[in-house]
Image 1 (cartoon, rainbow, N blue to C red):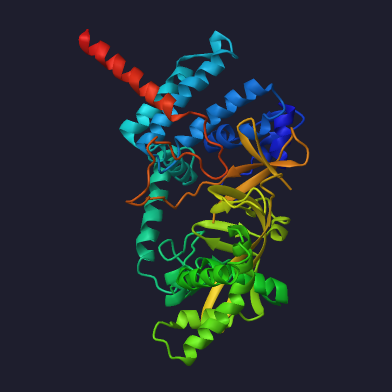
Image 2 (cartoon, rainbow, N blue to C red):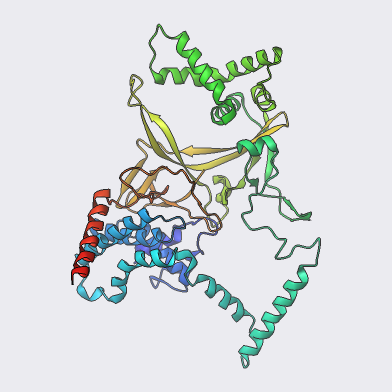
Length: 486
């Protein structure tokens, strides 16, 4: 218990993730007091897997972590039928593990009801739209209207009527920030031009001054102008050219040229990509210049400005909001009680075993890092591109999985907590968004094994195989047939 309290005092959750639970920690009494219902919810889902590591035997810790991951998984907004089958198969295994650890008196009817939660989600929809937190917040608001404790009903009615009257009048006020004109906290609406919006080059907005409906929000400006060195500017420009979709035909053309020039050397794909990355930006600039001289109709304004390269004078920010996520640089995090500098990237790349490897294997890798810098490149005032500078973890030596959690040694957002079991390592946890929903796409690829999509970034998922899911389905079918025969 003491270890758990110590971990809670060192934990820095992200913005709007949970309340500051360290205020509820009483080290002398070795207790957690004054927590709200949502704090208990987050304690089971997110903080127990971190705090229990090293305090209990591994087989006990892993079973409790699996139970917490189950509760977290059923709260996702984008669960599919395959995901629910996955969870239904896993929770029965998790309960069997708990039966080997805890005495029979622990397994009351409430513990047994856990196995029926997945079926409840199938019938009633996602848990997020059926839990009581919204009602509890509204009841807390109504409770705050009470001024005369001798007549609480009348005070609540008068307070509610006054609030509704002010809300009605605020609809006819202009130039004043009201509940209807006030932007949301993580509003990422920026001022992109047509080129930037089409290529998603400058999404979101920096933290600081923002004009919304001609209302000036008094927020201190958190940006500065700096001059990038030649190497950093070349690396940033190379990254832009390698990730803008409209430049892809030129990238393919340059790769063919590199292969043709080095045909006699029989270079492998790794060496060709290395030469391509080193020479492409200069070749691209000369190629576009020739197209301008020839008045090529295929040359667009976007390609023309990208080929000229960015200015060395860039804007630097300490905070940025994009896709509903609020990011802070690690330097700014030092002065806050929250942590918003953790980032994770899921990248599809070719993996080489060595520089001589001629058969690279395509795979999806999770890269973890901490945000150190945010800059906005300026391409002659026509195109602006926002880049995040991160300190990345070596995924070959600095990432490992232990006891149902991912450890790292020091666009998605994660947060980190110091691991009490392995010194020098940190536990990574994935951050869930409140106001953003993953609607999916119509042509999502589903493999033949119907493997669930519960392996979010920061999550290690649950070790249930498709064979276990099919076996569980067959058992259910046999049970139905027995019921019919009776």
